[in-house]
Length: 251
Image (tube, rainbow, N blue to C red; front, side):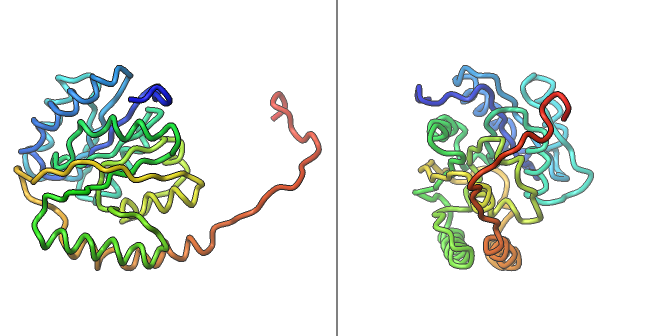
């Protein structure tokens, strides 16, 4: 981590849905990466209504690791809901998001944090994808369509490995599918966003929960809403302000 910026504390939010095979490795790799930072941290594991052994394993992880805590949904609510629940509970100065499948190594979290001295959000960019050709093609198409409709230039919106100044996450209200547009929503709040190359590994455990339908067609309706929001953002500059109003003691 650079000397220019060192967060006082860190929250890591991990949505979990039927990832029992990946959880032991996730615990080990996250602990190794975060212990090396030398700052207080917490890991918030949000179980999105898993039907496998994930809830049991999450309970065991939290019993072993004081820095880990888990939130359990009554039923599957989606990735955006899982992230929203984690963001609401995050107490760190910086919040990192990460998928539970370990395709993005937790060891790439520190390089993201280094960029928060100059930016408010550092988005992982999977420069060398380890997915099959269909997933790579669907991702390229989805990114192109989203950027075209939203007026964005985000290279890899599908990469969940991102680091945010928590104060900016608290300014936005999430909706279903919002996790796909977080950089855009944060920019609308004045956040400075940068993309950072990160590694990407083949999935060796479990199965992917998201395909072409999720990446492109299901998000089309949301894209139109985000585009409309961007066109309606309030912009103004205060020329002057005078008068006392309520002071701190009376207010």
